[in-house]
Length: 361
Image (cartoon, rainbow, N blue to C red; front, side, top):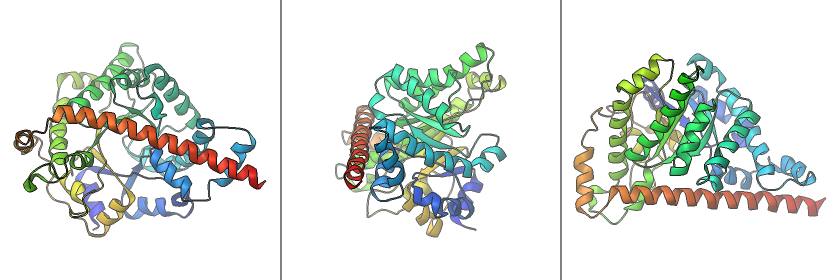
């Protein structure tokens, strides 16, 4: 049995953190579904920037957008929706079989809106309507301003992938925003079964402290933070508040591990996959990590429900001068800024291709 199947059988969903038109057209995504137990997919501006940069398959659509004088987001979102709706169709059997628990794809609102609640909500509503697929998440960052948009989007019935979470506290804030949206639907007599995932970024912690801590703590911070968040996740699922929501027909917002590709070339390529095996969670993996794990990964014991040794490990980092709360806030801010840069790069790439096409015509 392949490692990916073993991980799936343990109860964790394996999602691909990538999408390109090539993956769709050449059957690779379908093969990942069939052979590597992939049951969902995530995207972000960087992924689409690389897809458009490295393939001519988008040129025809870009040519049409150039002819129609579409710029920036008006040119990009039709491209993204074309790919993601096709991917959503591939995952539709999983979505149907799991009654909407699994089989999702994700599209991000413009990261320029990360600190604008009203505009984020408006964009989420618009994109979800345009997609027309029940298994498409709208990604909204878990920034302070994003939390209000998450609550409002859930209340409006829009499934949300909360992105850019880095700590237990940020996760809890996002989970509570989700619950408020569901509780409002129950109070209003609406169907409360609106799905969501909360995406906790892992590897960026270890990149941030790389070379600044003793060797014995290398590549241990991201996992410890994830263990702490997992404990909080299970506590929330066991809480009277969530049980009341579940009794009213609400669903659990699943915890998702993001940024799980190993950044340290000296570390195992399945470091975060092996360490974060846990039932009723999602691990969204870069393509290289997915294929490497499918080839030679190992599945060990599931995460401890009590957080394991996370508090001991985090205390060791504190002794070295690492302030977890401060670093979490910095990582979220840097993540938002990084997505903004990728967004600008993506818009510039589309407009550059449009210009080249106009010149050639």
